[in-house]
Figure 1 (cartoon, one colour):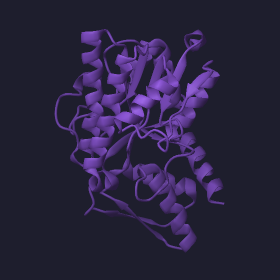
Figure 2: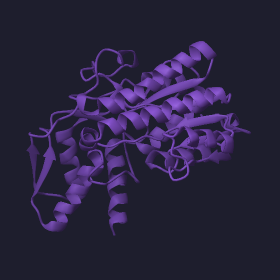
Figure 3: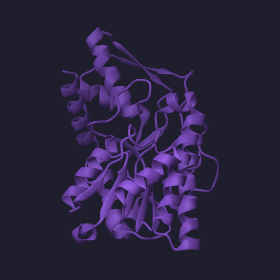
Figure 4: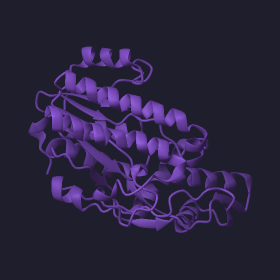
Length: 315
């Protein structure tokens, strides 16, 4: 059950509010009763710049900040832009949390990433295993930049009593995802490849890696529900995983997407390309215990919705 009274009279800033996840979070906030929502766009507020952050606080006077904004991409983008991914994500988060504390913001909701986990984390990933080792190399700069927001949240809570919480969502998917072949993650990339192969009459689909890694995905609307629920009900120092608890191999994922898109050709694995992290699956018990969240959307149903959305936008 949502706590609609939580949002009464509160001014809420949602960074990244016009993005993929942001659109769903804004809708959830409205259905939960939030009325005063400020969405800084990158054109007006480049949150890497201190001046833009200062202006944001002057113009919005927030009580709650939900920090979704991030510079993100798939394995290819992470390999091409590791410095940008590290710097931009670190500077946005660190400055926002610091200024939120200075401006007496009631609550800061920091969104981390599953990429923060060590490369060889015992499965399912438990939050207490975050520090067992170094992240998978291809996305370590991004993952570590986000992980520093957990360190900062806990340090500011310890020294200043500042209420900053840290959530760790697994990979998202759903309608409105990024389908740009240069920067997209695996699900939209595979969906697009299947459609384009059919457009061109091709009977072969080439996919990175060998298909053996496993991944967990959460439907974007479920993730938005979790973030809003945590904003209302969770005030603790521990990081919290946000996931579905469903693990699938990249091989099975590619075959499922081919079936659902109608691609009947051969899937060829390009083993000269990296696999990324060997396995990813989260222990999601903490989210259920702390703020009653459990994912609702079945994976295949979520994929069907995503494919139908992409099919309709292509037209």
